[in-house]
Length: 423
Image (cartoon, rainbow, N blue to C red; front, top):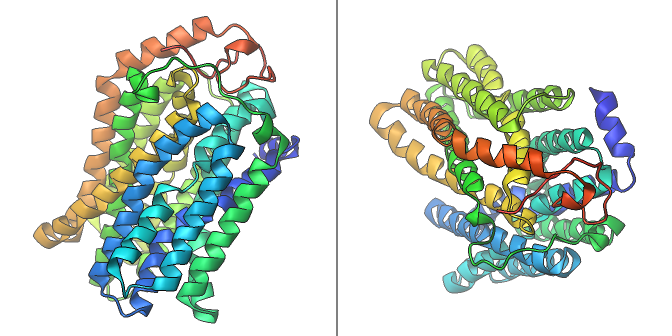
């Protein structure tokens, strides 16, 4: 397994792009906890802290597909780095004005969220021109999903460390300055500067005119809902057992399961259509959430959390492939950004639904929300399988040369690797 990932990282520019993207995404991965800690340090209530974090998340959800479309139209350097700078300035404004002026505080988090650069979608658009072979690109998607789990584990720890040794305001500034540096590293690289989106048909819906992409987004809204509900359910479970550390164990186990699952998934070449494979993975993901409803003792619950996380990273990695196959020509960065946005909105809804579920039926009901979300995602994929299958078959027939690759305008991909198509 390690050999396959090492081969990818040895490719020219690959390690730099992956590292730069992860560092550049650090502000987005840590913004919610950083905003909450900063607001509390300023004397603000938990309600205000949650509201500011929610507004940031909503602004990010709006900004990602819009900036993704801008990247497809104007290239990565013209969009990624300027938006990273503006986003960091938004957080700088929050650190300077604090929460004393609520209009300014809300303006600051809106600017920071709205201009969060779409580095995640940008990296996935670059992989074909960097790696060439379809198998290596698919493995890179899995490696990206694994690295994302590491970032979302390490990022909050870094924020809390900066807060403890310095201050919440300093944490905001350092994290966002680091993010700007990561974005700069990416856009100065040769693949980012050379990348151009394929010619696109002018259409106000952009990537959303693809029925297959809409089906996938509908499914991953519910995957996000499931994951978001678990974060609240984990807190309720920890409260039931009287130890705050239990929440950390559950979340760490969930992340460990995702790491293991993503690593194993990316280590082998998979036969068959990715759309069918995604349905199977999501079915296993949903089944993995069900035992959490039992809420057993801490040791058993930690083991069940690890099991529940195993199929998350493979589901995300496989979804990247499906997005690539269904994105209308010239919209690949926007399409990836829509997936990020939909997943995030689903997670936010999941946290909102899980709270009342705890109040009404207890901890088990909040974990039941996760299971319901997983099966709702499977239902969407099953109900739309004809839409997804038709697009996939069209792609397999049509993709007959390097020029057919959505992401590879320089012809680096092997013949037959078509990663985008005309809608």
